[in-house]
Image (cartoon, rainbow, N blue to C red; front, side, top):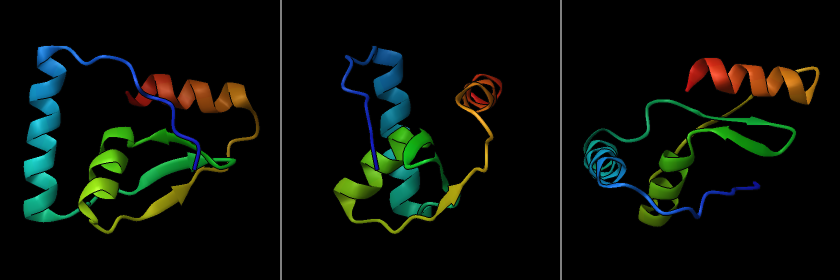
Length: 78
C-alpha cells in the first residue's frame, strides 16, 4: 500500500494521534482503511498505529472511476 505522510505534526495533531492510539488499543480498529487503486486515501493514522502495534484492520477498496472522483471523495470526507 502506498503511504505518504511524513510531515511534522502540530501539538493538536499529536494529541489527537495519542487519543487514536488509546482508542485503537482499547477497541481495535472498527473502521476500515479506504483504498483506491492500491493507494491509501483514508485512515493514514489508523494504518500507522495498527501497523506499529500489530492491530488487525480491514481494508475497503472504493471503486472510483477517476483520480478526480477519489480526490473529491477525500475532500468531502476529511
